[in-house]
Length: 494
Image (cartoon, rainbow, N blue to C red; front, side, top):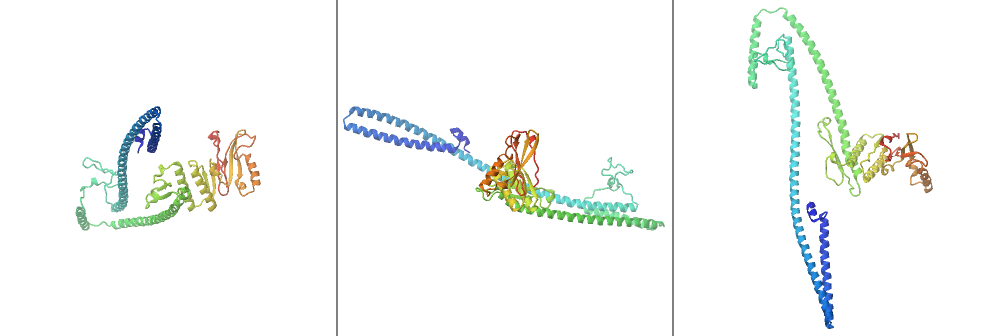
């Protein structure tokens, strides 16, 4: 806020300006006291010399007093200059404070605008969801109408009634335009009385006129001589219709059974997913708190899981929000690399609490973590291995992580043989509970074992370690000048 003001007066920040102003005030007060004391001593000496009738000495003292008074006037002039500077600085400070208030008001307006935009976005999402449901309903109605249309076409075929279809060889142009649509669909342009129905009342009138015509035609047919073979043809057609209907009913029943089976599987799938999701959602906050709590922040951070669309969980994503301790809420992609790592580990262990795995392989999960977070993660992994009987294989480059393992596996490169080798070390043998003598013997063996360095007189140019144990495992890779291509990972079976 006071950056421009600080640069204008030549200081780094406003705190430095306040320190200098206080120091100048103290200096002025001190100088006033010193000058007053000097004046008092000079006047006393002058009175003493006058009492002794020492004219020469009195003249000298008067001259000295004049010089001191002149000096005092100069200092008072400097003090006035300081006071003027202070007034100017206070005026600038007041203007900067006003500008700060204006900026805060602008930020409040922006926050209000952001809230309104978010509210509009939520309303748009609800509208889209409503429109999608309406589209689904219209699709179902369209399917039903298509079924009715197919039934009408089948009935027309059985009654040997020709319907104008698109793609028919007898299609004709009407009004200079060719019929549009997919082949096999009804061509309404070829109907003689093709018209656009405006409302339901007009549709009922047209329908009634056609029914009246059909009734007249049926009366006319009854007056004509009957076809004696029509009954036989009708029986054959009805038989074929019965077979087709039975086949259709059988397929429809099969389709309904399959649909029912599909719905049951979908429901079971959704229930299983929601069971796992609810468990992970319930436990992820406690796991994240355990990974992020400290003396300064004993409560740790907060983590939440939410479904973007609870009604259709498989057609949308999952919103994962993590808020580190002492920081405000931000999107996941705005967190630092270490904060993302801790959040990912919290999600991993929360999932593990629902479906425990026999062991974990953690490959350099501490690469983006600082020393404090490495200690927190290592302590948490250590506690989980003890409480849950969890086995971990950890590949790490930081000794603050892998020194808490139960065993180490070191990887090194043999320059002479151009091969990689491995060395193992059981850290439980070097526990502090053993005697001092035994610890010294083991430490002497460790000093040339090649786990943390090369053997005396050996050709090993670099060494690393991968920790492996039935419970927790730490790992280390050397960062020496050997090319990255020459460093290989080693798989360790617990």
